[in-house]
Amino acid sequence: MRYFRVTRGNDQRLVASDGETAYDLTSASGGPATVGELLASADETRQGLDESAQAYLDDAEPIEFDGDDVVLPVEPPEVWASGVTYQISEEARQEESDKPDVYIDVYESERPEIFFKATPSRTVGPDEAVGIRADSTWDTPEPELGVVLYDGEMVGFTIGNDMSSRSIEGENPLYLPQAKVYDRCCSLGPCVVSRAEVDDPHDLEMTMQIHRDGEVAYEGTTNTGEMVRTCEELTSYLTRHNVVPELTVLLTGTALVPEGDFTLREGDEVEIDIEGIGTLTNPVTTV
Figure 1: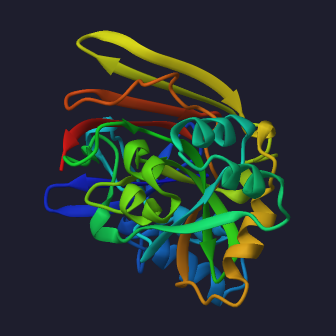
Figure 2 (figure 1 turned 180 degrees about the horizontal axis):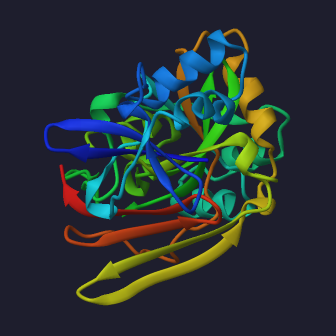
């Protein structure tokens, strides 16, 4: 199942889609309005996400919606991210940095790089603008597979865009929080796909296009199989000696980095597609 949040007037509804029919779970008696509420229900009954949704389907009304109706599918109190999990990411970090050796150490080390990325107020959904910092001169999107965690366990997947200031991070690795955490620094969507729906999260095709002035300014394709870490390993390190909120999203790193000194501009549009999940599209604005 794929889980979307859609707007209906002033209301937001939780929708479950099996690929043929979409069901308004919120319309069912006692139906959940958010993925978090559905996960809480699944936890109480010791069922998986899809099994919990199944309990509401008979009473749920079919619903039609389009991309204009879709909003942020899940609002985790914390979004975390992983760095240097693909070889091209290591190379890009070395290219931008005055201290490139530190990134070789991370890529080849047992312990992965995991850092805090965003709060709800810094996270946007489909078709909302992502931000580039006004004090940055080199900015790129980072398309990533997002792992949805509940009580520290992997329950689903989404798409994430880990917006980054390469100029700020390149000055000094200690500037990473400023390069990564700021207004509109993260987008998630368009849906949450249950873990049962994804046969192998380490074999998904991922593509990114950046549109500028009606043309494709950048296009790249990769596969999550190129990731040197597994989702399970990254989750394990995130939750070691670290109590994360009940609902958390962990981004797993990027393998698509625009070449050379390419930088985003206000008015660009970033489109990220991951096989089996969907397409996340965001315009770019300066913050």
